[in-house]
Image (cartoon, rainbow, N blue to C red; front, side, top):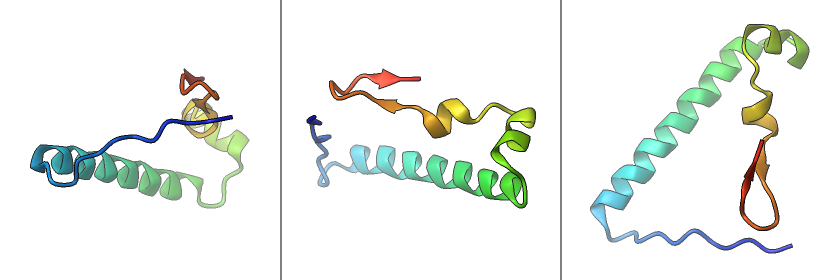
Length: 67
């Protein structure tokens, strides 16, 4: 199994802005999950919204996204 590293130019201001925006979205989603999951089981959480595709999705060994 092998994965290709994401190339990122830390000297490029636009790439840094894109990275910051992506990180902010991830943190906001994590905070939403924390609020909604407090004391709930995964099954209870799914009744509100099916987060399984986000939490259980991923990439295969070829780097392709799989639900």
